[in-house]
Amino acid sequence: MLQRTHGLAGVVAAELVLQHFQVPIWSWETAGAVLLGCFAGPLADIDKPGSVMAKLFFPLSALLKLLRIHHRTMTHSILFTALIAAALSPLPPLYGWTFVWAYASHPLIDLLNEQGVALLWPIRRKFRLLPKFLAIDTGSKAEDAFHIALVCIGVWLLVRYAMAAG
Image 1 (cartoon, rainbow, N blue to C red):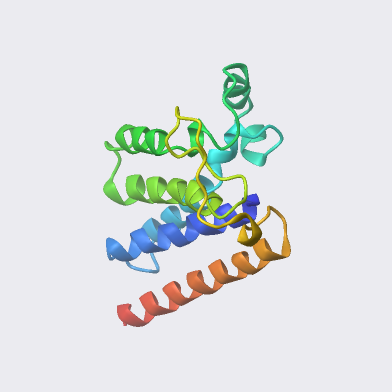
Image 2: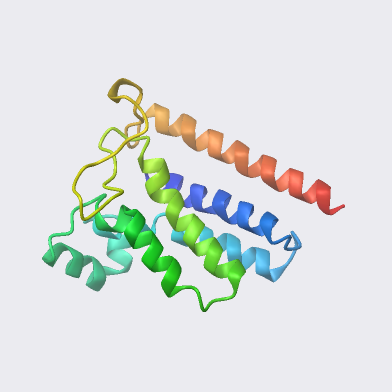
């Protein structure tokens, strides 16, 4: 998936966390959580040379390359996500959980791609949710449709939450 799709998935994850914590829709906390979700969603691609996240965090990306950490392995694993959750536990729950769920949305939607994800890294076996003929190729029309579906989900969550808030 492209960065824009991962960023949007991170925003949808942030919306779900905001609703769980019943944060007022028009607040600085909401704005911060949505921005955090947009950032955390694509962050797992720091392991992909040339990605926006690899360029933003070049020293860390270069270190991953030196360590021979390949794309969709360590940074996309359950273990790594759990380590991030543990590291962020001192943060206020709203922001910690927003980051973790937005980050976790990345490998989750990459499971829809043909290449799959090494969820159980350091075990190298890659998992995917769809058979190859239904898999969503990065940058394809299918990804565009998935992106539109995420936009619709995000808008629906926003409208539903705004109506519930009164």
